[in-house]
Every structure is written in structure tokens, then in C-alpha cells.
Length: 431
Image (cartoon, rainbow, N blue to C red):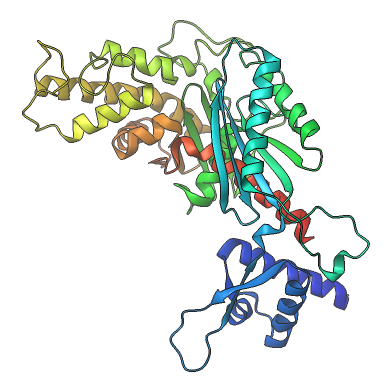
């Protein structure tokens, strides 16, 4: 049974909006080519979407041809604002954008672990409110199709996407009460919903958001099946199969920090990942490994360096292995450059061996074909660390697995939260 004219128009409109969302501004001719629709049909939908306030002319094409240039049409970004939050153990970062992802404001604030739930939540909420105010809001005319329908004002905050550590209940979409995470994390979601009653609040695990961002804009742009290994203070993994993020029946797919592996002092428990893969690859374990290899406190890897800083220094040291001079900030009696180079190489080799234990398990179970080393440590390791891990996987598994470093690194969570908010808002506004 053929679709009714109104249904066909809705389908065509949605197709055009999706293309404009994915490709950016397009001409009517480009829409015709990409949709396969006739020229009159495209002309009608452009007129209809413009009248409804969903798209607008944003310029002209730069094509060199006789006659006037073709008009470029794009989504009206000011129709709604979006907020994205990256919630960490001791900090919160936020950015506010328009509907097409143009960043209007961004800020971050440290959260004192001893501040208490109430003050911590107030700090975080106040940060979001300031960013929203800085981005600005306003009202604008609605299209003819809005008559008699209660709608958000243009420029008002529509959706808040939150990335947080811990498990998300797949049934409720709420952050579960997870051992080891601060109590203010769960309270923050409710406080935002109360203070921003017109905005929809969406919460997702930070590693899952990082994977979505890497798939859209980063290291996995050409893959629809891959696993992201998150390497930071904590350890996690995100599983994307056939372009779909897989969360598991309880929302815990990818909790690789609890994976029992050789080389630890025990086995993990239901409430503590100590003794699991986290004990070999978490930030604290990376720093301890650096100390054991004699690189912590040498050159750029100072005693107070973070895990990512030590890894970045080791990569740079190995790449500059022919240097003749001791680093200028090295203490008296520091080891010679060749010895420093050897220690840095040993540190990276040992770290790669540890990471390969977790990656090999993922490859054996899922055969993803591609593993992205994400988070600050994964990005700091770059190709130098990724190649070392890949070489070890090739010896441990008959299944091919490309290992890539993150492109987005620590910023992937915030980017993924924004993409999630953007997709949800556009789904609702575009109908």
C-alpha cells in the first residue's frame, strides 16, 4: 500500500534533515542528488522546511559557473541550545552549543572531594547555569505548523547530555549506585532536572560516549565494529558492533577493569576491581610501573607527573633516542641519554605487554578487528604504544586486530555527550 501524500512528505523532510545534519549545508541540487528525489519534490520540501523554521539559507555555493550561485541551506542552529557535561571524580566540565554543534560557551570547575554532596552538587549546577547564561537565550517566531502547540523558545536549553563513570541502568537510564564513586554524582542528575525543568537530561557511561565520539569524529570513523579501551584513572571498554553501541543486559558491558588477569596480587571482587586488569593498566599502576622502570622523576617525567605525562615523555624519549645531551632539568648524576632511552623503551614495552592481556581477551571474545586505545594515556601513547600492543596481540591471537591510538583523547567524553544531546534534540524537533 503506497504511503499517503502527508506521510511521504514527512519521510522526505526527515531524510533531507538527516542529510543536512550529517553533511552540513547543501544546495537543492545536492539534496536532489543525495536523496534521489525529483527537482520539484526537493523544491517543495526546501520551501516547507524553511517556512517551518527548521532550515534557512546560510550562503551560496562557491561553484565556478555561469549565472547566479546556488543557495546553500542549513539547519537553524538557534532553534535550541544543548549542554554537555563530563563528570569526573573531582571535576566537572561543561560546554553549551547550538543545535548544529557550534560551541557557544565552555567551562570547568574542580570539585573538592571533601566538600560534601550538597556543596559539590551546587558547584556543578552553578557551573552549568553560568555556561547556559553565557551562551545566551532568546525567543523567536515559530513556523505556521507551531500554531496552538506549546514549544520551547528558540535558543532555550533543550537537552543536557552527561558523561559519568559508573553503570547506567538500561531500564531507567539512571546512574546506578556504584561503589567507589562520590555520592554527588547521582545527586547531580536530579539537581539538574530540578533546576532546568524544561530541559531533557540524558546520562551515559563516559567510555561509551568516548566510543561514540571516536566513531563519529575520531580514530574509528571508518569502522562500524570496534572496541574502545579507555585508559585513564580508571579502566573501561566500550563495544560497538555493526554501528550499534552494546551496553549489555545490566549496562555493564565493557567493565574490563574487573577482568582477572595474570600478574596481579589477587583477584577482583564484586565490589572492588583491585586484582583485575585495573591493577595492571590503571593510572596508579602506570605510575608505579614507571617508578619500577626508573623513568619517574627523570627528565620530563617528574615525580609529580600524571600517567599520561609519563607515557608522553617516554614516547618522545624513544623517538629522540639519538640525543646526546642529558635533559637540562635532570638532577646531578642523572643517567646518560642512552640509558634513559633504554629505560623509556622498557617502560613502554612492559606497559604494552600489560595492555595486551586485556586486549587479547577482547579480541578472542568479540573479534572486533579494531581496538582504539582511548583516554589520556591512550592518546599520549600514540602510534608508538599502539604498535607495541598490536605486535603482542599478533603473537597471542590468530584473529587480526588493528590497534589505533585515540584521536580525541580525554576530550572524547565531552564530545560524545554533545553528540548524544544533539541527536536526541534533533530527533524530537525534526519529528
